[in-house]
Length: 399
Image (tube, rainbow, N blue to C red; front, side, top):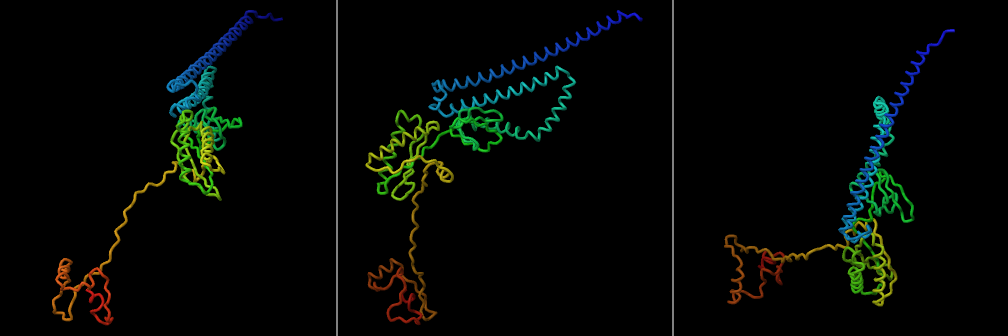
């Protein structure tokens, strides 16, 4: 039997052990590198999120301190800019948080792939380009959702806490991301609306809301007296210490809106804060009912109206009756016959002109002219006994 070379075997075992150890050391360093990348990325994400949260809280606290309130809902008593500032800040905070998370994850994946093998990064770039080209056709909706979501937030169309009508869902905005908006309706259903599918937004929380109430009255009432009583009742509500902070503008009476059978409908409107619209409408209806009963009248109907379509578009600014100034009437033209020079039968005879007004008056005073003769202002009428075939009758003879 051939004896085994123990030296060669030991050398091979030692070489394999060294290679395995080197491989383990390399893998360990790579794992440590990957762990360091994950820790650093997580730390950066935490720092950025904390910074965003800190900025948002600082802006919100600043708005609350200026308004001297502790609750965000109490900001409704402050100017509208403070409310929009808080809602826009919170919405942008959520958007920035999502962007930070996505960006950090993408950067971490690229760094981890580069730590595993630098050669894979080139292949990964090619693969990602191919995937991007393929997703460019299939992910058009995602890109549309993201871009539309960024524009919606940047233009302050919606904010967290707004009551909106998106067409697809109506309710309170609870969360806004770069791709989806969460809307909670009155029944508690949470709707997930893709930002790319939002083509119109009706924000019911911005600015002011209008309370429109139609008061039905008997047909034989004095409309002017009733309008004055209704307007006085609404003005008392606007001056009340409990309600004046919820009412924005002075009430208006838009007058007799319609006549249906034996019922007249008089429309009364006022502007209120969007969050207090229903409460103001309820209190106004109660006071209008008492005012009408105080006049000794029956109240056939009393309802709150929501204007839509052309009726709402034409009245968007209120009653706004046209303002016109009285125009002077043009002077009535007075007809005067044209004075013609009188000619005699003989063409050679000199032409004579009628006397002027002053000369005519003097002539009448001296008795030279007949006062009964027709004046130049009188229409030409042929005297009695004149013939139509006479060339000197009619107007010429009257002159």
